[in-house]
Each structure stands twice: as C-alpha cells, then as structure tokens.
Length: 510
Ligand code: HEM
Image (cartoon, rainbow, N blue to C red; front, top):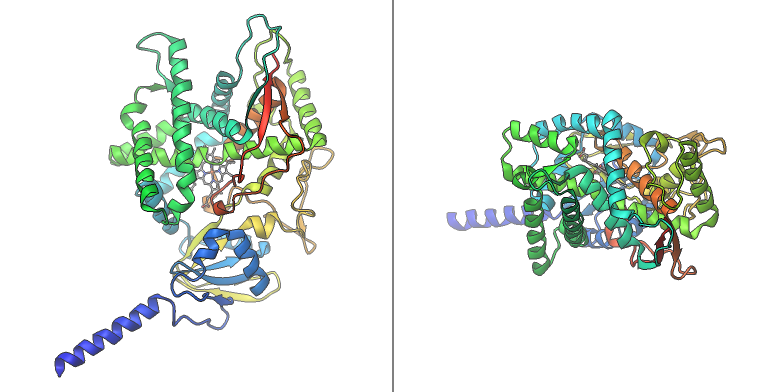
C-alpha cells in the first residue's frame, strides 16, 4: 500500500513538473505584458519564429501591440517594440538585465568557446584600444594594403584596358572584403625564412581564398546551428568546419605569421596569461573571425548593389570620393600607383557615410537579447508600466520596430542614399510622435553589447566601395533585374543575405 502511495505521488509530481516545464501553468500576472504561448506546449512559436522571425514579430505586434511575451522553445521572450523605452532597457543595470548569460550559451554551442565573465569584461579594453582611436588608423591602413593586393593588379604599359569579367556580386564582395579583413587582423605569411616576398604574397592569396570557401560553408549552416536544429549530416559537417578553423587559426599556426593585428595578438596574449589553454584560445580566435567577417562583406554587397540600381546615388557618392582624392593629390590614371585612402580621408565623405548607414538600416537585423535576472518594471511611451518577470528573456528587434518603422523613416523600403545627412553634410535628427529619438538605427546593437568593431567595419566597407568605384568599370549583367529578396531564415544574425546572387561585370580601369 505504502509503495503504491509513493509511486502515485511520484507520478503525479513528475506529471505536474513536466506540465510546468511545458509552460501549461504559466498565467499572465497583473501589470505583465500580453502573454501568448501558442498552441504547442514548450515549443510555443519556435517554428514560426525560426522560419521568418520578422514576419512572426510583425504579426504579434499587430495582435498585441508594442510589448508582448511569447513562448519560444521553452523560454519566455518579452519583445519590446517601442523605441522610446530602449534607452531605459539599454541603461538598466547588469544585475537586472544581463547580456552574458544568453551569449555564453550561444558561443559555446556555435564556436565551442567557454566564456568567462571576468575575462570577457577585461577583453573590452582591447576593443577600445585597437578598434577605435589610434589603433583604428593602423588597422585601416593594413586593410587598405590588403585591398590593393587583392583587387589592383598593375598593368605593365598602363595603357591597354583589361577585359570584362563576370561574377556574382555577393560572392565577389564577400570574398574580397573577407580576405582583406582577415589578412589585416590575423596577419600574413611570414617571408622571414625564405626572404621571398612574392611567394609569401601568393600564399596569402591562396590561403585566404581557401579560408573564405570554408567560412561560407559554415556561414550557411550558422542559423540552424544556432537554433540547434541541424540534421545529423550537417551536424557532422559543422563539427568538421569548427575543427578546420580551430586548426587554421591555432596558436601554433599564428606564431608563423607576421603583421598580426594588435587587436588579435594582445587579446590572445591576455588569454594565455590568464591561464586559458591553447585549444580554447584557438576557439576564441574562431569566434572573433566570425564576429569580424560575417557581416562586413554582405553589407558591402548590398551597398554596391543599391548604388548600381540608383544612378543619382551612384553619381553623388562617386563624385564625393573623387573630390576627396583630388583634394589629397591623388588621381586614377594610366600608369599611376593605386590610390591610397587614409582614415582622415574617410572622415570627409558625409554622403558615403549616409549611404552606408542607409544600407545598414535596410539589411542589418540583429535581435538583442538580455536575461531578466530580477523583476524589472518598464514604462512605455503611452505611460503604461509593465513588469518583466525574473527568469524570462527580454528581446529587441530594431529592424522592425525602428529601422523599417514608417513613422521614423518614411518610405522605409526605399534606399535613399542621403536619408541620414542634411544638404550641408551635417547629420539628420529623427523623430517619433514629435519626440527626438536617440535610437533611430541600430545595426550595431546597443549598450554593453554594442559592436566594438563598428568603426572598423564602416572603414572597411567605405574603402572597398571607394576602390570599386574609382578603379573599376561596373555594370549589372541585367540592369532590369530586381534587388533580390532577403533570406528570411537569417533574421537576428546581423546583416541579412540575399536569396540569390546578382550577376555583374567588372573591368579594372587602370
Ligand atoms: C557591418 C558589419 C558589422 C555588423 C552589422 C556588426 C554587428 C554587430 C552586432 C549587432 C553586435 C551585437 C550583438 C548582440 O548584442 O548580441 C556585434 C557584436 C560584436 N562585433 Fe560586430 N558587426 C560588424 C562588424 C564587426 C567587425 C569588423 C568586428 C571586429 C573587427 C566586430 C566585432 C564584434 C565583437 C567582438 C562583438 C561582440 C561584442 C560583445 O560580446 O560584447 N564586428 N556586432
């Protein structure tokens, strides 16, 4: 009898526990945002969210308004779509809204990197030192040198025209920008041993191209890897690719490189001094490769495509670059050396800046996530105050709530190269309901996790596009071709990618 009582109690307790975990008992409390658990226990809206996050969130916003809590794969996410309270969220103390809890899980899953809170905080100093300020000039110059190596081939006579070549624009931009960025950050082949500079240079071209090819394979698997929904065959491939990168960027291989950026070398040295084992340092470098190279190439593609589809924008941006070059005594003509664009010169291009920002507005779509460590209260612009529940996650999707919001950016689907600049070159202000907004474009995230590479990324994109416009003749193979749609399986992972490539022709001028 006693046995059956214990058995039944255990069974009931397990059943209740199971139902609790599936979210069956969760109810909306007073002052909490509307709660929507969907119809599938535990999974909730995971399938809809993964298929097309933007479409799903847009539907939820229409149904519930500017704040709502949804169940996605066992977690309750509260999405806040009202930009006027982003400031309060971003500034909330880390003891209440924490970025690291969520990101630590993700980076372990996708890069095999086990992060440590103290080390993470200490690494921020290297970002400030080398990706901003003085360090940025060095990196910009290194990137410029590598772009020249990859893109500009000297003609012996300086007279005859090179033939037209055809390629996929997305592939072309991603390939070149990835390789220039990779070589600038992770260093070039050492020629100390052989003394043969040409051979080392040749090796850099081959090696960086191989790395790009493997990177793209990983890139394609990335969203499903992050959602942990890869089928077994792709899982094996993802593991192979991880190992490939850990090995290619390993401590042993890096020691044979020269010109390694101080951003990479000093972070690595710090990890070593903090007692992080070699194999984990390799994984860290893979994570940095992903962070630094996964978005810049795709953004350059979109910018170049938007310019090629908008003659007025192309004329303004090209004219601006040529003017800056002229003012610095540089000209693109037969026999002249390739142009050299410095960080100072990049500071004199307000229309190109605006075109970059406009491109990011259209195609950069991160989802910013914080773990709610204590109950938090949040006041919306309409005055209603909500309580976010401890244990849930808070999420922002600025692409929908800010960047494509017609109240902030009229005709949000249009590319307007000068959207962010006044005719006199100063930056424009943006408003919603008559109130000036601080957060009107958020491609880089915000607050503690804001992208530390944003200035470098902008410099890379501007260098690449400037070189393409000044040294190459460019045309679309079919100039009537529409701009391809965005691949909706990648929302939330930074810059979006197109559903297909666009063929173009290019020819180096001189
Ligand atoms: C167009 C190019 C880029 C875009 C759109 C972009 C976007 C972002 C975003 C949205 C985040 C924050 C993610 C979050 O809050 O969860 C981020 C983080 C980060 N980005 Fe970028 N990024 C770009 C280029 C770069 C480059 C070139 C570098 C380095 C050279 C870089 C380094 C990083 C690092 C290290 C983090 C992690 C920061 C942390 O965990 O605190 N990014 N990036």
